Image 1: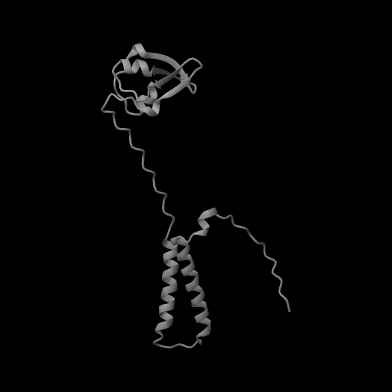
Image 2: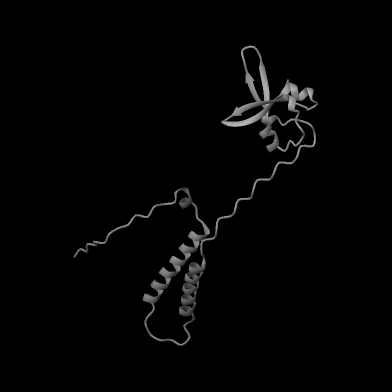
Length: 161
């Protein structure tokens, strides 16, 4: 005698790499499933007669109920909120931040420029000389740029040549 099952099967999408590791939630689900299977096996193996002091049955039933209740109570915890990035500390020396340097190499000479917006983002809060400022468009944004030689002449410490 053969039995044919004609139920529709459903495919549940996986979650990628996270499925390969054992999370606490997965371990709890495995323990709950194991306890339920053990309870079913023991319930069918034990004769159905009423005994007054059957502590084993009571303990297994309590474990299964406790595991199921714990699994139901365990809700998804909210994702941790990412900490905001710390603000850059103000520069205490008149050293121009090297991360802002834009080097332009030409056929005749090379020049290094410093955009004002980058200097301010890096915490450079000194008053920049207006006679050194040139207007430029950098990545589609209007900004003032300062040449390294002019900043050096104004008393700022510029790394490089």
